[in-house]
Figure 1 (cartoon, rainbow, N blue to C red):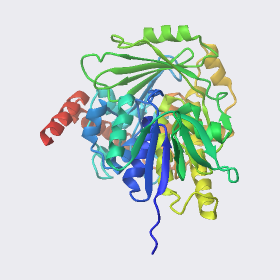
Figure 2 (cartoon, one colour):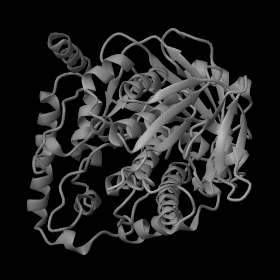
Figure 3 (tube, rainbow, N blue to C red):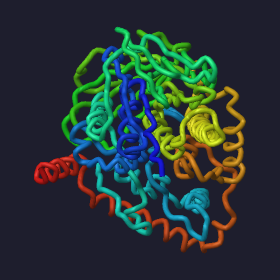
Figure 4 (cartoon, rainbow, N blue to C red):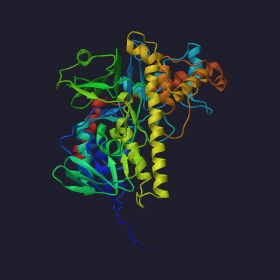
Length: 510
């Protein structure tokens, strides 16, 4: 049998997306992919993505990276969810947890039973029935249990880390697993005159490098997919008008480290607060059509706590995605493919999702036009588009589901026409209390329930099967569940204590 030659893969750009791709390909496709990264030291890291979703754990584990070592290197903390403040109404607060609410009974989701009891005035806030929410509120953390039946396994967790350290950490890992790196700035891109595929890139100074498959991780510039191949951009700014951010780190306060990210709605967007081990990340994501840059800086300075560690830094972006993320022999990953603002910490997830899909559909038989290669491209684009579209709808929900009318920005997002796909989901919830179900993608039922109920979008009815248990039995079950969750949360160590114990274990193991 003739042995296949490795597919020569060139990753254009480093950062989180580029080094994630290089690390995954080198680690998971040894002998199949020959990975070469072209990275310019002149290109800075966007650095907004300090907060993540639980899926990054799967990515780290799949690569065989030790969690404690990775967290030490990136000054990471644990994250149980996101605390949203002032989104539905000024003064409101709810946590979108990385976990479930209660337990499903007789194939009926827990929130239907809760809705019935809430209507009778005998149920606490739904967050009382989520272990992730209660642990987050108490500033506590423990690794979930491995079984699938206990409440101790009813939640997950993610990380909050220094984005400027994550890419280099993965870069070291990738190089250790066979990837190679060239420092340089790409000045031109060469394409095959017949097929239109990319053949090579030329760096400043004249060095030329060729490959079979090119992965565009060049950020918002989208050097290969956007500039060289001119793949159209779908602009979603009419639904997601926030297009700028001001970021500013501050010193960590004494006391407990919150195991969650905070998002506080302001007059023209929202402010983030992300506690790391060595500092706190802060920022204001806003719509420039509704707020001047200087005013955004002033608003951020008023919201942060602690001593500023650097001057405010401005970032500019636009919401949307490329029509296709894989064209010919170019696959765009990360910002070169699309961008959805960091309200739900989805940026790194979208990069890792695309990398995982690429590995699943990797063109081991070559990337030149063929039935197999074209089928892989179509499926990759379908899956990526599905992810972007569903996340887009979920983000829009946070803005649209509000009663706020205190500023032109909130008037706009409250009254705007939303995508049909979101309008249908909201109508289903309002009429039946049901969440649109799907088998793939991000943000399943508990996530939608958290935002709907947290922002006061109440359904008109609930599943009739929730009325089958006797009222007294149902009320008693809710009370026991609330007590059990409170007990489990209080038995966890504090977040800072858990991080200290983890660091001690790592030191002893070394």
